Image (cartoon, rainbow, N blue to C red):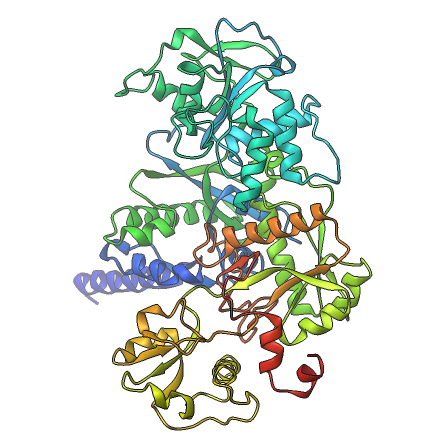
Length: 630
């Protein structure tokens, strides 16, 4: 065999070996919430993806992705500190934080931000206890640095006393404690999702709004709110102490390159937890920090130094690819934006330790003034699983009081006998729940664009009374709408049958684009344009509702309302954290409408559609049980 042939053969064999190595190289599975699955695929379609060797795995939401990593069905997830808290509290978990997503400007900082106490230099104060009686400036109600951290830390050191009065809501107990601790404050925000309650709380604890630019409004926008606004409240207003972030102090006082000073840094100091003071021109003494977002995996994936660095290298390539991707929105959903930078951890860290190093675990675990857990009754294993998933997500996102899931054979009896606090009830079971001395307090909302309407030819006027109705008799909501229209026409709602005639039809509002040449029939039998469907509709189906004992105290009732409205604000359709937990939507494959209707969008405390009430619904159901109950 000639030398040339030998070289050629050796080269070929090396090529095959290299190909084998490349083929055998692990493909890391990036788990993403299902609503962002296409975004993940789009990022990996980019031509610069070469060498990433990753694939996208869809989870229902971030909680499901964490479970998939724990079950070895996925390898890694882009997560926030609150997700890491959920990971730390997952049964049989062995998660590890492998790298961080930092900002370019603070790429060398150990934490995303540091919460600090800023005081005027001439203020005679040498301990946290001496904060009592001072005038305080806060970023805003419910916010981490300006509200949660101060309350948590001051409570933990026994300096701030929060009442345990069961006749006062958890929110009011905290506001009362702050109102008594500080003489005046600027604490803007929405104290309650109910406007009248919000107004009354601000009136009762008006000193918490006294230092604001607009005390009578005590809400955003306000020149003395937010991170820089709290500093401005201290500098330009009448405040004596401000709770804010280090980064904004540096910016406000011109200590960041390229920034212009709005105040004189020599007039202010940091107040440390031990009572010492530091000039703001030097290192800060923060009393709590928010950790960076980052990537979380499991022990099997990062076992061994080589495996650990392989994953980090692959994530860095994925991250860089995201930075240069044309689809910026898709990248944002993967926690990648133009101001972000990737940072590898020198070692994989347990989530608990990761959070404790920042002092952030205590912040997440603040009780929010709640006196006890609220017990949600469920009746089977899949309902219990969803309830427990919701509990984990809610607690990590500061929704209080904490949920507890109780499984019983008969939840109505369990709530009636004080073994549970509430249960979700479908429309057909409202009467049975009423018989158990329960009452609805929160309702699902399907949004203003999810209603059934009657469409009719514009030429039809006098004939409307006698026209047969075309509707889907297999659809309960459509059938109820048809029965309602018949009732309004003085036709027995329980004797009519569906017609194939198309002069008068019951359709869903989402289909109205197909009926632009028709008009609507209102409950009053008035004819209106199809654009008026929000006020001219025949929707009478009762939503799923949360029922409680009639004997619950007013405070307990307000607590339940607040709990479900908070769940809705965070996890409902278009909620701030819909990707963290899917409140409304399939829980598992073929597991639909678990606890709540998949088509619901939010929870509300009152139903504003006048057609929707129990009396009308019971009359139109046209079954023996409903009629007997009239």
